[in-house]
Length: 273
Image (cartoon, rainbow, N blue to C red; front, side, top):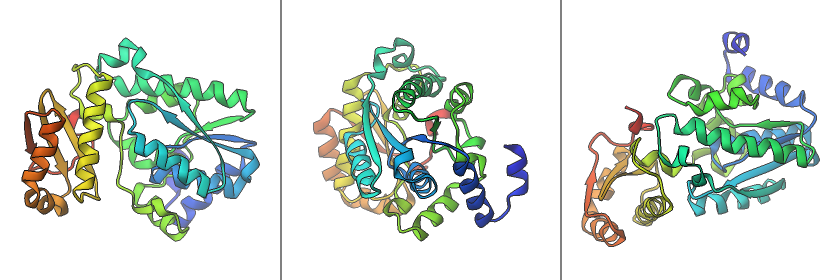
């Protein structure tokens, strides 16, 4: 993998490397969230291997907003690929619900152990994950779980970065090319604070409400007890200010006592600082 990273320079070279990697698999199960990365990976897998050798699986869990699960199923249908929604109650694990700093590792290990079993059941020889090259340079403890379980990450292995994947997705006509970056709802809760279904539902409802107010780019509602800390891109700050009374009332009705706007804006992984 490191040799590939050192040698590949252009996006075209990286795309060719991705195609070569995918072409070496007999059949694959793609962990499919419906985001930019996993959608492009699924699209290329179907193009290289054919529909009969690819299975897309979307995890159905309280850690993922229902709208995202539904959208993934609709996208898989448009791509004409075999698709399953696989329910896992991750919060049955006290180790996970206690929300330690290695939460992502615990979560990914549980998910991909289940996907490996599912792949064997459906005759898929390899499980693929949509991690990209940028993910390897930030705090992603889940990557250690993937490596332990020998999950393949072709986008990362071919050195493709997020912006390159967006460009390739746009060129391929994939509607997901400009979809905002997403993350599981647990990333909105400070480490050490218990994760439970009610809290996750509150966060999901708050973010859905903000989407209804016109926020189309990256968005997070970080939950600090009864305080909601809203993170949006600089371009959306005006929307929040303009509709601040409406947003306050909506989030207050949901159960937040204090609603704040983070002047630092959207920062992926801000809870890791």
